[in-house]
Length: 551
Image 1 (cartoon, rainbow, N blue to C red):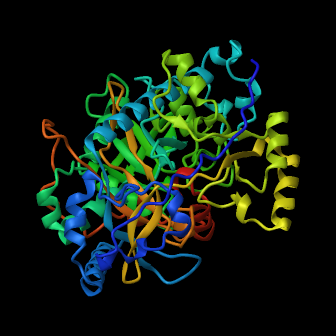
Image 2 (cartoon, rainbow, N blue to C red):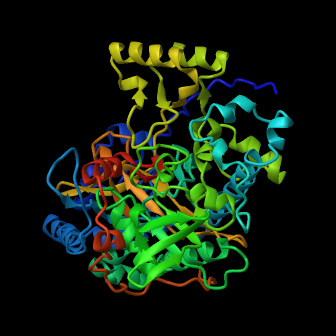
C-alpha cells in the first residue's frame, strides 16, 4: 500500500473572545494570553455564554471568593471522607483535585460523540479479532504486516484464543480533545481496561451533594449505572453453558494507583476482589480459594498488564498474576477481560491507521477524526519531523501519563537535539503532531475562575449485543497555567462531566446524590493468604501501571 504524506499544519487561531468583565468571579478571563487561541466551552468568541452553560453561569456569576473557596473545600472534604486521595512525587496524600465548575456537553453534541465512539470500538474489535485470527487486513496489504508484528503489545501467545461471544474489548476509553475550531478529535484509544471511571462516579456523588440546586435545574444524565452495564458485559462473556458465571476482579494489589477503582467496581458489581495468590489453575481450570473451599472462576476482569498476568507465558518473576491462566483461556474454561493482546489496538502508531481500519471493516467513513499525525517510521514523514521538531509535539509510541513528550515550541536546543537523536535511532517508537490548543473550561484558580485546558475520556462497554457509552466520562484539566498536559501524575485534576438529556429523552436524570461508598472491600488474599515476597509484589504493583491506567 502506498501511503501519501500530508504536511501537518496547526490550524490558524480564531480571534480572541471579548468576555464580560463585570462578574468578578470570572476575572481570569480578562487577560487570556495563550488561552485566547483555544475554543472555550462556556463562552463564544463574542463573550456570550453558550446555551448549555447558561444555568451554571447564572449560579456562579454572583459568587464571591469566600463562597467559591467554601464550595471547593467541601469538594475536597467529601473526597477525603471517601478515602479518595493521591500523592504527587512522594508528596503527602491529598484529595484528588476535582474542580467545582462542571464540563457540560449538549444532547446533540453527545449524540455525535456516541456514534463516533461506537463506530471506533466496533472497528477495533474486528481488527483485533482479525490480527489474532486470519489476518486478512495484513494479507490484503491494507496496513503493513510489520506495523503489527513490531508492536510491543502484539502477543503471539494470544493467537487461537477465541472469546465465547466474540468480544475482546469489554471496556474502552477513547480519549477525545476539542481543537481550536471546536471540532472533537480522537487523541488516543485505550483498550487495556482503562482507568478513571471511578472518578466519574465519585465526582458525580460529590457534586450532587455540593451543588444540589444545579442538578435540580439541569437535565443531567445519570452515570451510576456503569457497574450494571459492565457486569452484564462480563456475564455475557462467559461460556454459553454458564447460566450463573463466577466473576472476579483481579487487582495487582493496594499499592497500585488504581486500587480504589478496582475495589469500587468489585463492590458495585457484587463480585469478589482478588489478587493473584487467591487464584490457581489445575487441569486448565481456574479456581478461587475461599473459606468454603475451591470455586471455579468463569470470568476474570483483570486490571493487570499482560506482562504480569501469567508467569508461565510472560514475566516469570511476576507474583501478581496466575500461572497457567492463558492456557485455561485457550481451553475455553475461563474468559480474560479485556483480552490478552488488546494493547496492539491502542498502540499510538496503529492509532494513525484507525480511519483506514474503520473503512476496511465497516465500509464507513470515520465519524470522529484523528489528530493529524506524522509517523516517524516512514522515511519522508520522519524527515519532516526532524526538520520541524521545534514546531511539533513529539510523543513516544509506548509513552503514558504525559511522560516522554517533547513540546517543540517550548523545548531548548539541547532538548531538540536529544529528541532528534532518539527519533533517528528508533523511528518505530515515535509519532509527532501539531500543537493542538485543547479547549478550555472555567476552572477555579486562586480567588476566581480562569480558562484551563481539558480533554475527555468517555468509557464504552461492549456486551456483545451493543456498545453502550457512559453518558459523560472523565474530563481531565491541566491546572498549571499554560500547560496542555492533563494527567494527574503531571499535576492535572478533573471535572464532573454533564451530558444533558434532550427534552424528549427517556434517559435517567441525575436527581440526587447516591449513597456514598464509605468503606472498601478487602481482597480475599489479604484476609486469607498474605502474598509472599511482599517487597517484590509491592514494587510490581507500582510498576504495573497500564498506559490506560495512568491518569
